[in-house]
Image 1 (cartoon, rainbow, N blue to C red):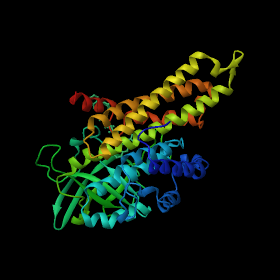
Image 2 (cartoon, rainbow, N blue to C red):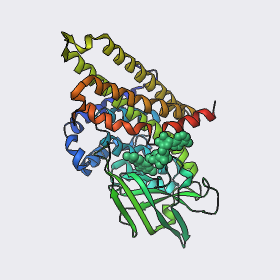
Image 3 (cartoon, rainbow, N blue to C red):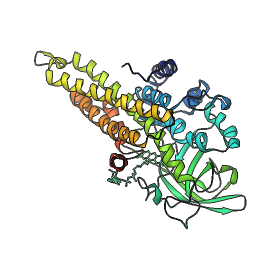
Image 4 (spheres, rainbow, N blue to C red):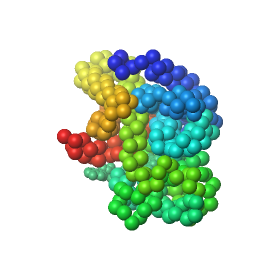
Length: 379
Ligand SMILES: Cc1cc2nc3c(=O)[nH]c(=O)nc-3n(C[C@H](O)[C@H](O)[C@H](O)COP(=O)(O)OP(=O)(O)OC[C@H]3O[C@@H](n4cnc5c(N)ncnc54)[C@H](O)[C@@H]3O)c2cc1C
């Protein structure tokens, strides 16, 4: 679909990502649903420059904005393998922005080139067994000791938890103050003493994505691993959530669009009651309405990303996107499975997988209800 927000650069991101996904991801990803995404794939994507879209040229990337992340995420989403897509996006758009947006100059110089090349894969660990939507309720602590901090606590549902080389951990550095204050972000390297990954969690969808519980017992990190400034973490999290929500809704849009295309193709061929399913007005009109909604959701998402790229505060717009597109993806996949009939229920058809994969779109990264509160506050 044409959009006034598209530029030559964005079209290049789209066409290069689409070609890569069709050539390297779609034929191989079925195996990853049981084995996980191989590290060589991430290495390859890093070498080809896919991880550097947002990273400035001086640090090894090409310095594009949030719109590029949305387009990239849409194209990864079109692979129909949500677990693969989130593995990449957690690195490029959920974790890396902490260093990109708030890292000190020496931290950027040290880490960003390694993030861009794929030498280091990252994760972001905020959620805990007793703190998800309510980020201010986190209990993990980091107490000052000498030239660094000692971290204690447990993180829950962490994507890339076992494969990441560097985990950015939200911890309370000043437990004496109210919830949202006194939080800092600390980078913990894989293999640090006292840092273990607990259970790898079995999930409804995103099967190729690694989701783990992380345990920190007296884990010491140097001052150099404190991202940005001490006690500013809550602000960093809320700010980076905006980028995260745009990226994961880009994914949901790509998945919805691809699922609808596969469904149009299916119903045009499938015969019942003397004609194709497409010739039943009820079916083609529902599909047409879902297409209209996807187009609306995409424009809403592009507009919000464009505003963010202009440096505008776009919390209301991005929260609207997260609420609208997260719910929409579930409606689209419900219909796609319905119109595939029994085939839509058979494991490992693309729509069956996507139906499971998109369920999280209205929960992760800000549940619909939490997003609607953000919108309501601003009405
Ligand atoms: C597969 C997967 C991967 C994840 N990856 C990561 C990761 O990499 N890093 C990370 O830090 N976290 C990650 N998460 C955690 C994710 O962000 C949280 O699950 C999400 O924020 C919701 O938190 P919760 O599960 O604790 O639900 P809760 O906060 O317990 O909320 C449960 C439900 O209650 C409703 N609700 C909550 N608050 C309100 C309200 N104020 N008003 C009305 N209704 C409300 C919503 O419907 C919500 O879904 C992941 C989760 C999953 C399942």
